[in-house]
Image (cartoon, rainbow, N blue to C red; front, top):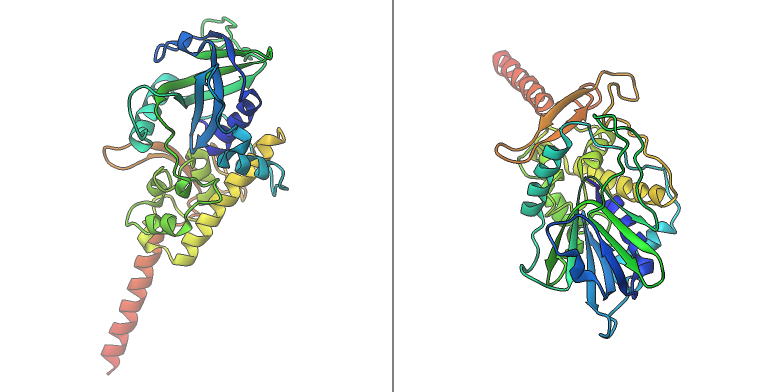
Length: 337
């Protein structure tokens, strides 16, 4: 599913339409009645982690703050104007059972990022599935034939035509009405309010580090691509327990997460592609064979993970070897006395 940098870019695509009235609607969504959006005004656009929120009001109602005036929009705009260091861009997820994958991800996201209030409201929450996207003033076209040999364009879940003549198209996403967006910038890795201390406390847990990194309560917007890449950059094995890592190692991992996510967003806004070092690779940049496994907590959500056994050694084995060495030294000293 699209990760934090992608959803931030989606928000920037919606911002020019803030303040405009919807004059025509379409789409295949069955979660909402798309006709309910007709004649409403798009009042605001916000992003939190992997979720986009759009606020709609009656066309004759007063306008609230625009997206440009919102805190999250200001952050995204300032990031877009900053110089990037090392371009990164989204790559396709593994081509394995897309429908099952989307269902698992959507179920996972519901447990991770619940809305603050249930029931009807004026905020429409978008959560994107596998290959989910937003396009402005254009439709997505098929770039290859399907299994039947047909060239069929993707079917939009929602299409919003505005009074200016422009339109937004939403693909492969789930939509829910809510009374307000769930916004916790302290957990958003792309927010200036991201809380490093809370994130470090979470990383210290005696759990495999690859499980903790995908916990949206502490790393909202961090997804599988970012997880794989930053663990390789920090030279940490994905199954290493966070409690075995030195504070300096955890600090470095957190720096990699923030820098990689920021660089990815900047390069996305420049239209550049992602060149991963470990994700979906058979060899690491040093030529070592890469291992792949489906990792996740027992009874929880599991994700494909790639790592280099040589560049990312198992931490518990290193600790065990060190303990054995100390034990042998002590025995030697005792015997010599």
